[in-house]
Image 1: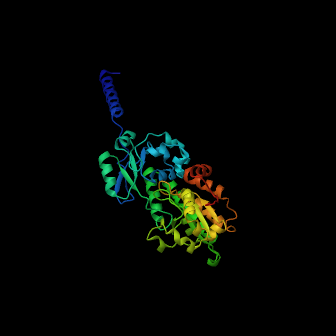
Image 2: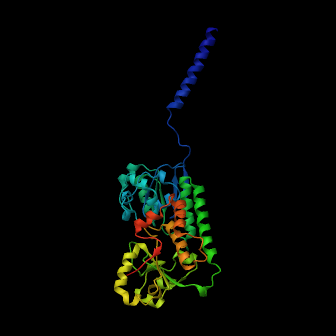
Length: 370
């Protein structure tokens, strides 16, 4: 080998080694600039293409993340999520199904969190239940972390399309689009199944029904009801409470004195308000005893579905139990407890009916107000 050739070879090798060194020393670049989504209050938010670390603030946000099978990405929770007592967990099915959430660091108090603790958790995205775009903008600007607004103005009734939109939004952020579509498909299939079972029942054969004890912003008694209770709506039941009685609310309180006039033949009591319903019975016993459902012992407990916003899985489970009570022939193939565990398994990943019953004080059974 001649001298000039050898020097050239050394020169080439040196250049190659230097290039390799520069590549190894360079900081890792993002694979992309992120994706932009439109959240539930209409804000455009840019989030990383790959999201592995999130926190949730406000009623319902962590529940939806659980529905989308995203709990492995949660790096901190609100204070109340780390409490482990039965009455602390209550009807929050996502929390009952995922005890590991209690082991995570706290990000501050319920509904709002704490800025310093959120930063310490180091999330890539914050999901926040909010009605105001300004609140989310303020938090995002203050912390320098993308804030995706969710909303509780969704339901399985008039606002079901918003419910589906919210599921798809979270699916897009967490790269869980397939799970989002599975959730939507399963929800539609469930509603269709309920409606199909009762579609041929004549109106004249339907009993008058009422639900009391529904929780909202805390527990309430027998006067707390709904004109759009999904188990009644999907089963096209004869709800004695009409929209006109509710003053433009779907859930609220009526004058307890009109219940005997409405005279429901079957009453369902949400376990969230059961003890307060018993208190109401003591106070209004004379008038409530005139109601057919009370006289004939046609009182049934249903799962508390409002606990830190709506637990949609429990609400769907209630539909099947109500169906077995009101339309036993059409629901003869349904074991309510088994069906509930199937629903919980799909929605939150665990069969937790027994635990929910323990946490809330009761399940699917006849009850007494005395």
